[in-house]
Length: 533
Image 1 (cartoon, rainbow, N blue to C red):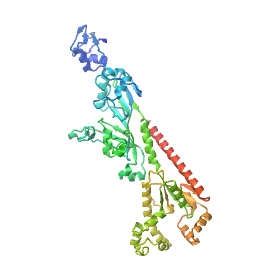
Image 2 (image 1 turned 30 degrees about the vertical axis):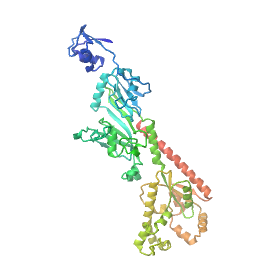
Image 3 (image 1 turned 45 degrees about the vertical axis):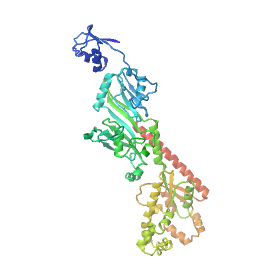
Image 4 (image 1 turned 90 degrees about the horizontal axis):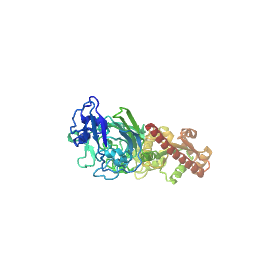
């Protein structure tokens, strides 16, 4: 293909002039000149440095060279395209360009299908000016001419291209940054690592902001020091990289203690196994057009598998709903706890806990023996004397003293119960004196259910259990009035008709709570998408 040009005033060197006119790199133009493809004023010219005069006629014969790469028909999301460059989205699981260790179909094969001009560019990575890992999805900038490739490569080298990523990581990750140098792992050549500059590492700089959860609960905060509990939490981060080292985000976040979900190289095996790929997406790309000077910015929301992973993590995080059953004597608290157990829900009983604590060499048995000698533990081979203890607790001051001793033991076991069962749909604890005795601060906020019944029905049930009027009055004196408990509770379940109605109301409540939980997940996802759009 022959092209003709007329040199203007002060056209300069032959190779520079032709490079500017054709948008072919100067080095490639030089090869054309040296290979006898250029005539000046109808005379063969093999001197790339020849100074042109105004009016000189230049003839350039271009040979259409094509690389050996093949085009593969595909669908490709193109955010922007002109004659110089394109902004496209890479799907996860697709290697960017061919290499000796990867002869499978690559993004380059897809690009050649959509941009045939890439066939004439040299090498096995035509148009590629930066890369994404195979399992990373998101925005990429592609050069469509050799001149554009050189200019864009220079922009990346000068750190003029801004790249933001979205990352799903394990644990509640605080906002932070890392400037640790990165280099090849000393023994595993396919892996990168933190490597000092004096040992071959290269400067690397990443900074990140947590966008979910925006605020963390007291329970999550208390789990930060507990690695096992950290494994049950996750964060969505927005990551800005100021340099472009291989595996930079994955290495920095893993070293910081918050590996990417699904990262088979840098995350522990159980974290890598949670999802099929590393949850990393090139979310935003900002750069100056190398020829027009226009400031361009593009945003890409993650693909479906990223949102599916996020939804799964939210559902797991929101599944465990701690429930407290309370109510006055005879209301049916224990009956409701048995209904919960029949639904295969984990259950906890404060009364059963106290009974266990009273056993020989258990905590309450030991504390009472240490504090009061043989008064309540007259025989070291037998449990606490509950009759003697109940009699002594008729003294209000002594009752308060015993409660201050025993209630922390019960609540510590209750908290452990909820922690052990945090992945069940619900965990249910019966605490008769919940409103009368709960600590001022707890690392979780359970939902409370007050089981109620009329006084006549409650007293009738208690008398069937051989409670005298004196015992009933004594036990009632320990508790606040039923009306006050109903007011303080999140839910009331009346229990005046029998067990069938009690069970039906409880199951309806569980179903409503599950539906709210699902709706909550959908709301969170919608808010995140709105924030990122």
